Every structure is written in C-alpha cells, then in structure tokens.
Length: 363
Ligand SMILES: *Cc1c(COP(=O)(O)O)cnc(C)c1O
Image 1 (cartoon, helix red, strand yellow):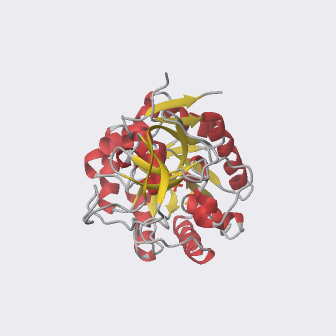
Image 2: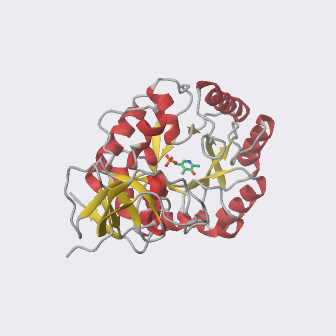
Image 3: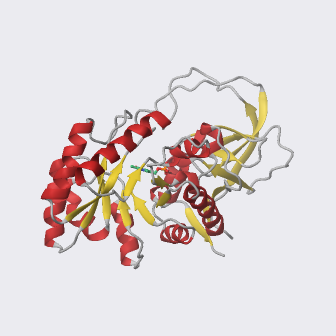
C-alpha cells in the first residue's frame, strides 16, 4: 500500500512549464536562471529546468548548489541569497556567481577565489525600494562596480540586479526597472564595456513581461515559482500564461476520520494549537473529514487547495487538517485520498519535510 502523505513531483510538467517560460522570456531578449529553492533543490527538478531552457540554476542555499556541482551539472550555478561570511569558502567552491550588496563580502569572495585559483562572478544588487537586499544609492552602486572591476582581480562583474515584491511588496513596474536599466548603462559607461547580466527580478516580473512593460535593457530573470508553482500567477497577479500546468506538485493525504459535527466549537474559546483565536462561522451541523496532514507538513493549511472544488479547508493543527465535505458530489470513505494543490509556502514545506513521502514521476 502506498504511504501517505505523499508529495508527487511531475518532471514532465516541470519540463513543459520551463520550456514555455524560457521561450516567452527568450522572445523578449531575456535569459532565465531557474530557481530551485522552492522545492528543496531536488536534483531531478534542477535537471529538467536545464533541459527546458534555463541557462543557469540558482538557489538561496549553497547546500543545494553543492549537490548539483557534485552531480556534475555544468550550467553556471547562481547563489541568490547574498552570502554569509561563514560560507564564503563553499560559495566559491560550489557556485559560479552570486548576488552581492556588501563591499566587505566582495573582499572576502575575492580573497577566497584567489585561494581557489578561480575567477568568481558577481551580480551587484540595487535596491529599487522593496527594502530587502541591495545597495540603496546609485552613486554607491556605481562605485562598487568600479571597485570590483578594477580592484578585485579574482572577481568578474557579470552585472547588476534587483529584487522586488519580497519584503516591501513593491510591484515591478516599467518605472522602477527603468532605474535598474539606467544604473546598468551608467556602469557600462564607466567601465567602457557591456555587462552580461541585467537581472530584473523573479517570477513577479513575469506579469509585467507579458504586458510588454519590461525595459529592453533587462536581459535576465531569476524564476522559480513561475515554473514550478504557476497557480500563483492568476491567483495573485491576474496573469495567465497559456499552457502552464499548475499540477507540477500535488500533495495527497489520507482520511482518518469522517463525521458530522457542529461548525462552531463548543465551550469557552481561548486559543488554538498555535496560540491564536481564529474566527469560526456557525453553519450548523455539517459533514467533514480529517486528513493525516498538518501545519507541521504544509506550514499553513490555508496554502493548500483541494482539487475537489467542493471541499473547504476549515483549518489545521500540527498533524490534522479538517475539511468541510458537506457539499461534495463524491461520497468519501474512511481511507480515501484527498488531493491538494500547494501554494509556494506549502510546496516549500512539503518538499523539505521528512514526514512527507516524495514520489518523483519520471517520463
Ligand atoms: C527566491 C528568489 C528568486 C526566485 O523567486 P521565485 O518567486 O521563485 O521566482 C529570485 N531572486 C531572489 C533574490 C530570490 O531570493
């Protein structure tokens, strides 16, 4: 008997989605770094993204890139979280380029690259207002670019990049990306050469790309979610890219209790398993099911979406998720399997959880 809960990872769907996104980007002069951190860096997934047209593979975690290097993956590996001082040796060993915003980090990378007898690639980050990583002033950015170019012999300035809609929820727009394009041009003028990479963000730049709003100078995007978790594009960004399959990842969980119960808890309400007091609608007595899957597995039960559209996720504790199945056409029985699409957080959590069985569907 199959063991549940299980996370199914469909490689063909990942491959197809990758091809669609890389072709779309390529038609607008943009190359794609495929980002694998959202699914825990599963190596087979990274390989499909390369087959599908990603010319670099990136992750925030050097451990994931190390696994790829050790498997002999030969596309450039990009570290997308600005490096910690304590990991500089691994960063230079297991990746080929990274995003950087600190001068001191650049010095350390240069020293380490010299030690390892390498030339290591740099993308300087420019903060366009989202207020996560990045140099805040243009002048400082241009100075830093010259510093890399002329003072740090074992580093090569690949280009500049920016990150949006991560901390500050700032949407990528023609206006803010034009600032990045201008910064790139200014640096090119100062260095008297072209930059290879002008990196205009991640998945959240795709909606602007589809609407032809990305300035020409932007030639690089770092995309994970828009390939492996495509339901976010219509859900949050009102963007449909034809042919993208939302079912690259599907979680399946088994029913362990079926019942009819009231919908409002009985007794004095205090706090739930996680110290908060949710709102409970009183809809009378309804049919419900508990599946053996919890917030320990998915992070937050509001980030999983039952494929049976008549099921409502009522909530979850660490190990139990409560589903309203009152209006379902299917007559569920104990032991039946419920399938869920996962949003980004749930994809991340389930792919990393030791309690979730992973089933990689090959083709
Ligand atoms: C995670 C990350 C990305 C990719 O994000 P997606 O939403 O998965 O496309 C790109 N750039 C940076 C700096 C990141 O940390």
